[in-house]
Length: 225
Length: 79
Image 1: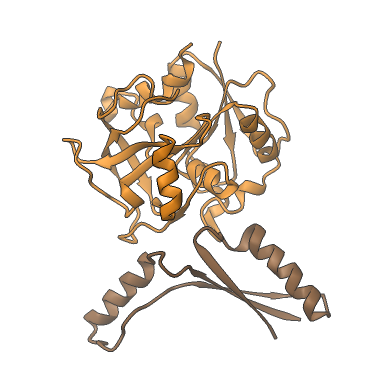
Image 2: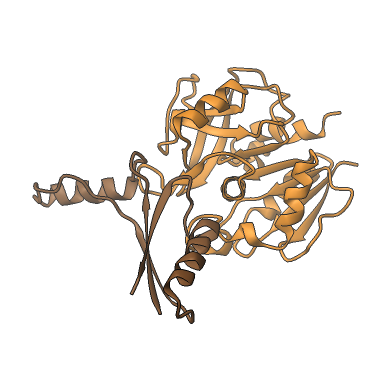
């Protein structure tokens, strides 16, 4: 059975949604407390879920990176384990240096919470394997600091290594930028394609009743053999 | 001793808060404002008495936690 470890920090609020989503897909999910020192040894995927860890004090995710469990998350990632950071989790991966760039306040300076379309830029990775390039998915976003920044050289490197995975767009797939992110980027991965970060919430798009099931195709990518 | 740390977004990194405040000031007819940047100030009390040692320690604090050096610069003032 596919084993998912979802890390819970003080202020995390998407851990139960994430657990629900992966259990619906048939995975076994454990919530791991941030003060734990080690991940379960049979972990297949670590999810750093959304929320407001440590109240977003200082900067989003600035303090979470020093939680005891994070040393083991870094070890897990460096050994090739799959790590998915959603929203606040993406901010953590940036703060930890597992992904490149940084987050700023949304260009509107407002918290944005709504469904938003995303276009697949690259699918040569586990996360988006079930989607095709230029597919448009509809996934909720909910953030105040999702304005992705990376300098020009860094951006060129991301493109060169196919690390730009999703961009914000309209329903026709034309770039549409809700938060000021460089090149409308919504999701990136690391060079080894085992660490993924995105601001949108695929775990909130798994029930028709709630408006979209597009998140399933993303989350279950990791579970494909 | 008292330490004051000023953290600001680097030049060339667009500051959404500064831009919004600039816009608001313009709307209030403060037309002379050419630009606004918003940062944060951290004030701390250190038990260290040697200024050079204090500066080295606070620099480590800024690099490790207080500033995100991908987008932010910091200045340390020792009172």
